Length: 303
Length: 281
Image (cartoon, rainbow over all chains, first blue to last red; front, side, top):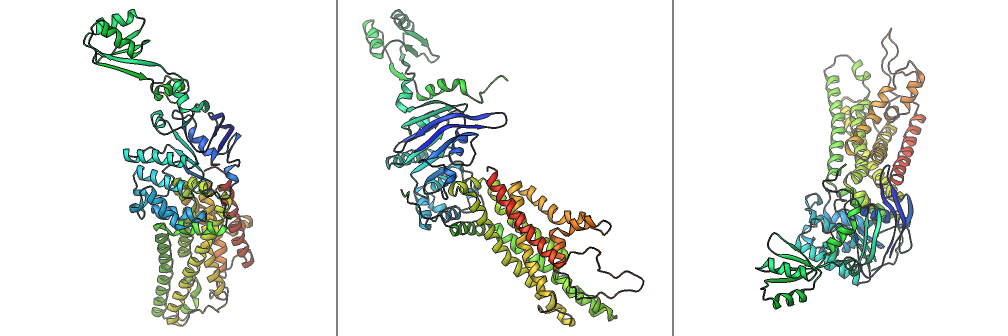
C-alpha cells in the first residue's frame, strides 16, 4: 500500500508536483499516467526518498521509505534502466545489490533467469540494449521478493515479446497480492495492463479510479459505415437526426444512431452496406481529452 | 514475498562495496599502473645514483647522497597520491555519473551507512596497496644502494616512519578523493580538483618570507608527507661560505605532520558523508 498525501515538490521556477494525494492498493496493477513532464518520475522519486518533498508525505505500508535501513525486501523499483554502471557485468551488479541487503547469491541467478538474462549474466551492462537494461532493472526490482513494486516507464525499449511478458508479469505479481504501480505516458499501454488508474497533469491529480470508470467518462460512441451510395445514406441518416462526417477514404462516421438503427434504415431503403462498425472512444482519446489542458510540452506551442 | 526483516548488518554493506570495487576492471588497471610507475621511478633513481657513485672519483659523492630520498621521491609519490585519490573518487563519482547511486539508495535507503561502508572498504584496500608500494619502493631502492654499501635497513632511524607515512599517504589521498567525488560528482572535475588540492595548492604556499604563508603550506598533505620521509640522520656536507642546505626556518615537525594526516582524513570523511547524505542524487 502506497499512500501519498498532499505531496508537493517545487523547483526554483516550476512546481513539478502540486498537492498530490492518492493511494495505491495491493492486489491490483495501478497505472500512473500523465503526459511528459506531468511529474510522474518526481512523484516516484519522492516515494522512494530520492527527492525530498517540499511539503507533504509519501509512505509505503505506513513508513517513510527513507526510514527503512534496507529497501529491497520492502520495495522493488525500476526508475531508470540506465541507473547502472556500464563497467560491471549484470551478475556483479546484482551481486552487490543482493549483498547489501543480505540476500543470497542464488537469488541473483533466479531473477536473471526470470527476466531471461541468464545467458548475458557475465556480459558488461554497458553493452546492453535498452530492452536488456529494462530486463535487468526488472530483475533488480524482483531481487528482494518485495510486496510493493514501482516501475517507471518499463515498456520503453522492449520488443513485442518483451511487452507481452511484462504485462503478464505485472498481472501475476498483482495476483500474488503485491502492490504494483506502473507509470507510463502511453494510455494504450495501460489499457492492457492496469486495473486502477491514477492520472496526473502538470503535477496535479486528474483522476484516480478503476480503468473501466475512466473509459466510461467520455463514452462517445460512433458508428463507421461504408457504402457505395454515400450521398443517399447521408441524407437519410441526417434526416433521422444523426451527425455524419465523411472521411477521405469514403467511409462515414455516424454519431447519434446505433449500428442496429442504421442497418434497419439502410435495409428499408435498399442501400447496400459494406461495413457497419461501432467504435467506443479509446482510452487514449479520453486521456488526451482530460489532459489537454495540462500538457507541459505541446508540439507547435506558441510561446 | 518475504516481509520478514533480517537485521540490517553493516558487514553486508561492506560486502557490497567490496564487490562493487573489484567488479570494475579500472580498479585493477589503475592500481597496477600506479604501483608500477611509483616503484619504477624510485628504483630507476636509485640505479642511476649507484652508477653515479661508481663513476665518481670523489668520496664525497657517496656521503652526499641520501639513500632514503630515492626511495621516497616526490614525483613518484605524487603520482601515487593522485592514483589513490582517483580510486577513491571513482567509487563515489562513478555512482553519481552513471546514475547507479539511485539504484544503490533504493536498495539501501540509509545513506550514511552506505558512505561509511565505502570509506571503510576503500581505506582498507588503499592501506594495503600503500603498504605494498611503500615497502617495495624502500626495499628495492635500498637493495640497489647496497651495492655501494650505503643501503639503509628498516631499523635505520626514521626508515620505518618513512615507510609507514608513505603507506598511509595512499588511503589518505583516497579519502580526499571520495570527498571531492561526493561534492563534485563528475569525473573530469573531480580529478582536476584532486590535482589542484593535493599538488598545486601546497606549491602556492611556499617560501620562508612570510611565516603564515609557509604555515598554510605546512598544513597540506604533501608537505606533511615530505616531513615524514625526511632522513634527519643524514647530514649533507656543508660547503664553506654557503648556508647549510636542507634547513628550513619554519619546518613541519613530525608531530605536526601526523596531525595534518589525521585532520585531513577526518575532514575528508566528514565532507564525503555530508555531501552524499545532504544533497539528493
